[in-house]
Length: 294
Length: 265
Image 1 (cartoon, chains in turn purple, yellow):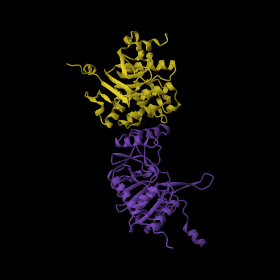
Image 2 (tube, chains in turn brown, cyan; image 1 turned 45 degrees about the horizontal axis):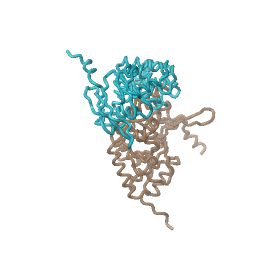
Image 3 (cartoon, helix red, strand yellow; image 1 turned 30 degrees about the vertical axis):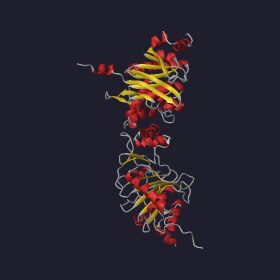
């Protein structure tokens, strides 16, 4: 028997059209959460069912897909989504940011600057930035409609009152196109400035919550703050231990139970690219030693 | 030259005209009319189920009336019918020019965020964007309602009942409203705490020249705070007048009953 014949990119054409309509509306109203009829996908909620549906709806046969999970191309989630589309759509996949036309991401924006021919698709667990401040969804929708965002500053106020600075490190609220306050999904706040005036369209899909929202290309995205406590992106104060990069977002990796740790680029493609170009850090494997043993 | 402030005080702040509200066949409020002037405190008294709280909700635009209307003189001096205000305008009014003190502080406060943020929320909602100034204003208000400034970063969850109620008052007054609605503000507090709260309210009302509509079943509260009293029964206003006049010389049998049911001190 033949393998089951999937429609191109798994979803049927009607569903894709429905999702595309939601995406178009989301692009027309930057930052506004558009409800859509999210489908069951062959993966659990929390694994990117929203992002996968958006990707499926915009993917064409000539697209090149890259999937990252916390910056990495090699984790289970990234590999299985890449394989999923390689199988159901037959599209080419890549790990190189420059070669990709569609990039699905969980929690990071690639370090390499994006261009106009690319689309960034985010997997979003909780689309509502006001969720933990105002539990009633009817009320938060009204607050968005009337642009009542004082409550968002209450959260930042609490941060400063408790920790002396704005301690929100990820899912840092932004105002899109001077109108809607948006949750940029749990990306570190280090990535917030990359959203501003980005040439690539950014699409956000939340599968369980059944919402799609978007930032069109070259849109103003401002991180909320106070005049006397301005927004500051956070980064560990260290170079990458493998490629020596001083400008990339770092992961902290604990290496033993005696307190040793190393900092490495969270964007694996960026780090590998730099290493291939001859950069190295304090813990890089020295190539001459390997040759001596080889 | 015309004294602008005196002219302002001569015009009613809020006018209710034959307000009624029915829930199905039950008429909760029938044909209520009155005017409230700036700086005036009006107490609405009556037993449970007499329509006091429904009236308060009608007056504050939280409930649509079945008949009649409420007009409010905005800060620009123009009287507007509340029913014609858009939702955005009404909510803005609620955040700036009005206050609402609930009987249960948990309804009026955000119990999980600090006292400072509770007081500062209204300021942030009207666009204040300077942490230092918001915090200074919040601590100033905590002092005014006699809450220790050292507790500014504690959540109201950790406060006593009286402190919560005072915090709720500070949160409402921070934008310097002209009209405050109060729904049984002293309910559920013990007598000595009640007395302190009433004292505080009385001085704040005088100091800020607030107009207040206070709903209460406690005639002592009405006597202490209000200039005028409206007595309600079965959804109707049965007696209205100056506080001393109504409480010392009640005309209606029901008011007489109400007054006589208080234990003599």
